[in-house]
Length: 328
View: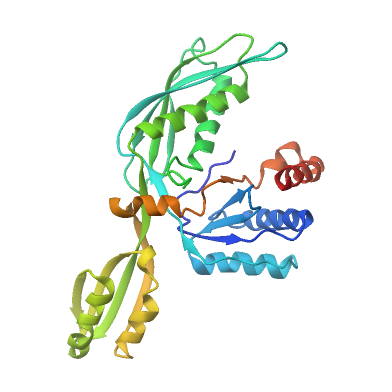
């Protein structure tokens, strides 16, 4: 699995179920083609309702992806309303074990690892560190599999299935079986260790905070100041220069159907602009509602380049197999 850019996307839109399996196949190929040029979006698939959710960095970015798929690949696409992309992180350091053991008459599998999870500075990204030196603990050939399992677990967290950010995972111990260990077993063990650990690490939900900038002539500022406070419910930094007051206010994206409202209230006396700022923890009193209403619940991240691992000649076969199994 190639590294996933969790940092850039902060909005999602959901594409309704394609009319046919062939339409789904063409849509995935279109998204893959777009991903070669732009890695700042992620794709999630919902097996229950066959919907596709795209995460990107803003409404215009998502609209451009959908418009391009529709026009260049001649697909009839119906999208739902753009929504906030929440994310998850942890708030304390924990140690966690992942142990995958399967025994049957014909097949035995064994993978086992211990990891430490630590919260990182906000917006610093995820990190994997290998502290295994001795081959007798975990052979080096299995370390990348543990990392892949952890990265897969990061695509869907433990609260609302939101992507996980700003977590450091350190592999420091484990064991192996001379005959039963294989790469898949260690990938599963890494995934299990991460999910087990995250549940213990006081996970929290993060939301995008937008920076609202309002510019208005000082002579008119008293006319609209009360309107601004009534809409935003908060105060921000104010600077004045050359007779212009510049207000900078941090507002959660979930509250931001307000830019048009503010521009209307300003009535030509000023203007309002909105840009992405950062992610911050959501208030505790709305956490359960966000989890309950999560558009990513029950979805799974799709690596658009997964089918290519077998080579170009085999990609068509594996993509068709994926679409058939997903559609069932």
